[in-house]
Length: 163
Ligand SMILES: [Zn+2]
Ligand SMILES: [Zn+2]
Image (cartoon, rainbow, N blue to C red):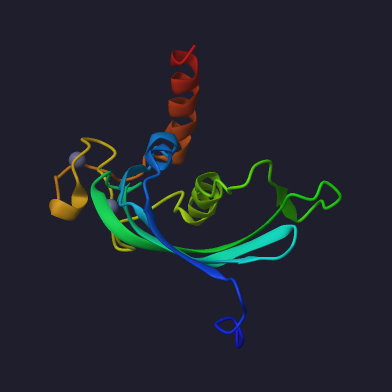
C-alpha cells in the first residue's frame, strides 16, 4: 500500500449503493441501509483491480425469537477485471468500457450475511407450546421434555399426520 498515492491513476470510489435484492432473497434479512463503498481502482493496460471495504447496517429477524434487530456489517472487496480474452480464472471479463460493480458488491455482502442471526447469545426464543417471546417473561407453559418412550409414539403420530 506504500506507493499508491504516488502512482498515477488509482481512482477512489466513494459511493452508496442500494441493493434491494439482498432483502428480497434472504428471508432472515428484513432491511438493509445503502452499502457504503470505500474502494480504490487501479487500472493497468488490460486489467483493473478494484479493492477496499464495504459497510452497511443490516436489520435481521432473530432466528430464535423472530424480533428484528440491527447489526453492522463490513466486507472486504477485492476483484480483478480484464478485457483481454486471453486472461482467465481469477479475473472477471469485461465487455464494455465501464465496470458494473453492483453484482460483485452484492456477492461480497451476501457472503458476510448471518444465515442464522441471533439478537443476543442469551436470547431465549419462543415458547414451543404457546409461541410467547420468552425474553419478555415466562409464559407458564409446561415445557418439560416428554417421556422418551412416549416420544417414539409422538413421532410416529406426527409422521402419520403429515401424509
Ligand atoms: Zn432473539
Ligand atoms: Zn408458553
